[in-house]
Length: 64
Image 1: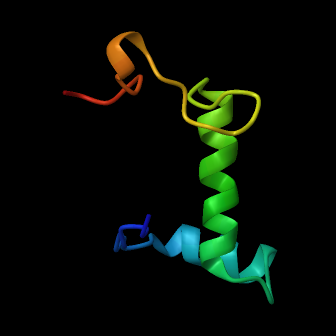
Image 2: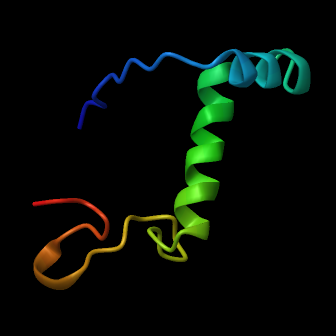
């Protein structure tokens, strides 16, 4: 499966955090880790890091 490319405009604050707090790391990697942490905290991922499926295979939080 090929990942869909998402283009996002970062705020000045996010850019500064990435530059100052994570020098030498790829911003894409840091943002991926942040997304995984947030999805886990919000209960969207199971213990194995896979997206949980709701009733009828629906992804919780996603509109039909």
